[in-house]
Length: 437
Ligand code: ADP
Ligand code: ZN
Image (cartoon, rainbow, N blue to C red; front, side, top):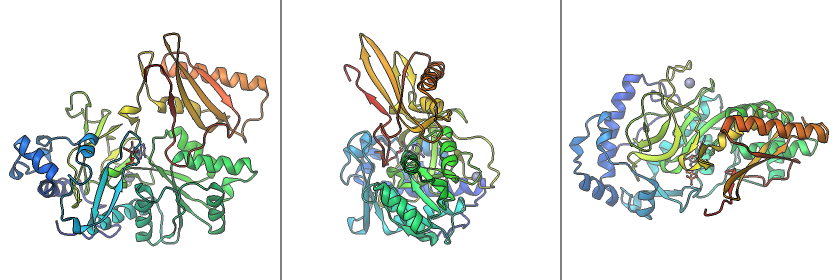
């Protein structure tokens, strides 16, 4: 594959729907040919009887086999490498949230394309070379650090590679260097704000105007809470290491779903049970194919993330399709007393309440033979000034609202700010201590 020069704001960002379709078909052909150079896909395509000429247009994608996280694990370490190892300049791994991490390789061209996509995302939300950018996610094998870093530098931003954690230093850096744009997980951004408030400091006194928040699911209610606390705009950023990392899908200034860069990724939404395509607009599992990666093309990757393609056009004029906020991973779904529950449903109820702080944990236990759910949530230091009596009312109110949302009774415990473990990266929202798990 030849190198695609794609400076920010180039024709790729503003392609028409027809151009996207044509480009995707062309890139899919090349991606499949490139993937076939890896031992893994060579065997997989042979087994499925697929010849390169079977793939002519993007509609032919359904002829190709899916790739799962398990396939990546089985081909670990280098079974999916499609180039001479000499051409590899970097590797990353996933965070390993759900098991052994998977390794992903990049050539120089891959890294440049990724940086360009990332710069495109940042420019889309209004960041410029005049901004000072603090990157608060982990550097190293995790993709959030270097991924954002290269994009921010590409855009010419003053980039501070702060990494994750060390909250006091994060706050100091933001103040001393007049930081205007940050990247963090939403749970860590919330933790920093609450820490400042607890110390009598006001997050609004910072000069932040843009928060790029992602790497974990969060609700619209959480966004509103964060925007309110900081007085900045929050943009949702979705990515996964298998598809590079951040820079896959990103909100524009309209904050109405995340544009997927379709020159680089082919998107499908499938029913995870039947593996058939969902009806347009229906929620299902997101499946993605890399269209521009050379070191390790991945075909029809089952992300396990649940979302839908939003209908209609975005007022910004970009034609790249938009994904709805992720509901969560299919494996985030809890089955409690036979009822399917996503942590995001609980978060939605909690974050609507102004007295509730940003940190919560869902605790599952077995009592007798029954599942028991206890939602532990911190109150907000600034907005709650009530008595024990109001605290009790708040608890009862939340219990009732959550019961209405999920359909069974839950216990709510309202706690003092700072009583739950704080997250510096991906928050752990569920502790499942039920018997037999
Ligand atoms: P791991 O799968 O081990 O967590 P990654 O670090 O590659 O490894 O994380 C990618 C995953 O993080 C995605 O598949 C998704 O579940 C989650 N994620 C990333 N960004 C978002 C987002 N904006 N909203 C919801 N979930 C997200
Ligand atoms: Zn838009």
